[in-house]
Image 1 (spheres, rainbow, N blue to C red):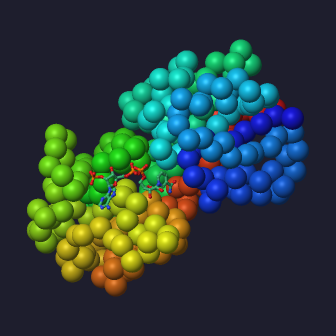
Image 2 (cartoon, protein in one colour; image 1 turned 180 degrees about the horizontal axis):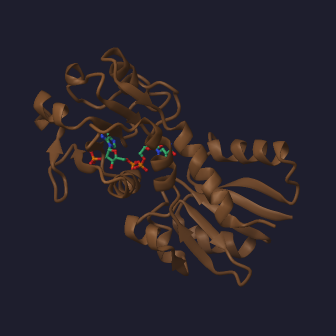
Image 3 (cartoon, rainbow, N blue to C red; image 1 turned 180 degrees about the vertical axis):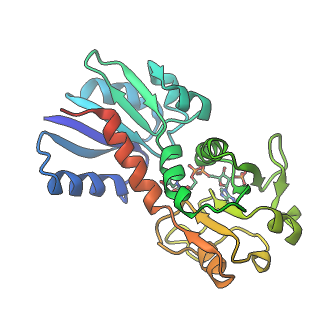
Amino acid sequence: MNKLGLLGKNISYSFSKSYFKDKFENEQIDNVSYENFDIETIELFPSLIKNTKNLKGLNVTIPYKESVIPFLDELDDKAKEIGAVNTIRITKKSKLIGYNTDYYGFKKSLTPFLKNHHKQALILGTGGASKAIAYSLKQLNIKYCFVSRTAKKGVEFTYNTLTKDVINQYQIIINCTPLGTSPNVDLYPNIPYDAITSNHILYDLIYNPAETKFLKQGKQQHATTINGLNMLKFQAEKAWSIWKID
Ligand code: NAP
């Protein structure tokens, strides 16, 4: 039996396991199983690979998307440019190849909502996911700026410099912070929501809950709101196509 799985830490909540379990059932795929590989530190990764027979591929989640890279044999060009891996394919010759499908999931889920005036985006947060989002926006020819809690190289705004004027200029705002994730559903990024209009898209990478406070406040201002569920589904399907299970 071929094996696939999710590499991460504290991932019992995992979307991926139930997504692939349902997919295999619905599509009557019976030559592969999917399980969680929950490891305490990335140093345990080589022994996991060595001791798991018939492992063909992995999804990778927090906190290993960057730290897994030194353990891989090759990186796909896009993963190299993004600097993060969320999918690993294990070849017949046991080579480990890293890919990034988050950028694809984000791009595919955002594209149907784009209008001509959506020319500039604010990316809230500067972690692993934000890099894949920046890569997608570049491909879509949308200019972007990073917003962070701390001023640093490559960051254009800190939260206390986000004026109404800035919000007027950037009509796509993407939450790449964990603020608002269940069970901390009362948290949200600190931006001037009263400057949001119906011309804005508010995109939250969070999918649990389906509507975060960030999205709720955007909706109150008549913005288009998108949660992270479709991104997650699209990146999962792209990973499946990379694994090429036959
Ligand atoms: P991360 O590296 O843990 O954090 C992202 C960034 O959020 C941090 O670098 C930080 O940026 C900011 N941040 C963290 N705590 C904060 C706080 N208390 N207040 C304000 N900002 C804070 O996470 P990630 O891997 O990039 O993922 C970000 C989110 O996207 C997570 O919720 C994750 O579940 C979600 N995600 C969803 C999908 C999907 O398919 N839907 C895919 C990937 C990730 P600064 O230090 O610069 O402020």
